[in-house]
Amino acid sequence: MNRLQEIFKLKPTQIILLSFVLMIALGTVLLMLPLSTTNGQGLRWIDALFVSTSASCVTGLTVVDIHNDLTLFGTLVMLLLIQVGGLGIMTLATLVVHTMGYRFRLQENIVLQESLNQSGQAGIVELIARMIKYTFIIEGVFAVVLTIHFADEFGLNAIGYGIFHSVSAFCNAGFDLFGNYDSLCKRNDDFFLMTCIALLIILGGIGFTVMADVVNRRRWKKFSLHTKIVLVTNIALIVVGTGLIFGMECNNGHTVGNMDTGSQIANAAFMSVSCRTAGFNTFDLAASEQITQLTMIILMFIGASPLSTGGGIKSTTFFVIVMSMWAVFRGRNEIVVFGRRITQQLRDQAFAIFTMGTIWVVTAGVILSAIDGEVHELEEVIFETVSGFGTVGMGIGLTTGWNDWGKLILALTMFVGRVGIMTFMLALIRQHKDPMIKYPPENIMIG
Image (cartoon, rainbow, N blue to C red; front, side, top):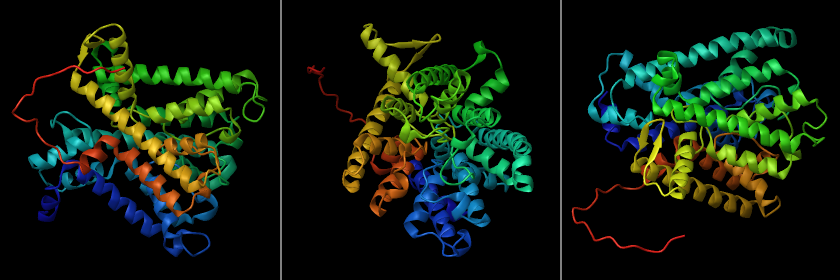
């Protein structure tokens, strides 16, 4: 335990990064083993690193066909990485050492607080226990339901299909076992499956604190401001996304244009839910309209909600930015939502996260485009980059074609998207307290 205490002398953000790095490294080694692949040779180190990063960061981008290229052992490695990556290795490690009787010191509590994005230290272990309980209950129920649904098609193997897809959907990973990189394209008329997957994505994406709030308080008036903002923002994004995707694809015969109206709406709704952070798709994205891809890029960039299994800048960040702009337009200095005031510090953090995320995506996209030799259009490369940053995993056919440098850039982008751009930057940059000396202010012209 002394070694654990020595490790906790690192900055909390650095420990969070280190935990994911170690998990990715372990997954890489396991996927390189001969017994992980059907050809008995194991994955190349760069492919193993890419897939391990994608699974650990619950992204879904892949350069291997899980169904055809990985053995049962390799698939189990992927499943474990997805599960641990979705919950966060710090979360599971905390519960294990706490169960063993270890009591956390102040600095260690600060690390846990940082990893769970909490403003206070009270009830951290209880929150972690609740997170794990909710996860296994939800995944367990849907695993049974999906097993029954798959039974006629896959027989005994339906158990594995049910468990894998339940975990993959709840953790917003987007990996599937159907093979040939088809995702759900050949099952876009299976509305029961689409409904189950969509519900799992939503539950995994709203965040554990919201789930706990809804379960314990049950009434809108009693919900915290965070819960209200998350629910309102998620509903709005799903509805708007559904309308836009349906409107732009309803006449596209290469996607949903040949379906009846009800099926078109169902597929549009599923894609609106999935493209925020999960990565399952029910039609060929490469065949979709450019404006549809742009809509998906925006939704992917926003991502899921805090303390969830998804990535992106987070729905609450997007909400604060929109409300901040609205306040500026109305000449207001404060943002008041549902009878509560949002502090200036939160507004500054939201704009910092948005700005850093935008800079990262644009920079990574330009580098990838240069590596690609401009073979693909820039918007396609940006789509792939945002998909990685938002830990979504939707692809338009570029993923398997990247060279080793391209895979490294995308792997790093997935990593940053999962741990959070703010956490990543704080881990690298040394913080300083505000100086005691206060300088006089002076206005400059902006806008």
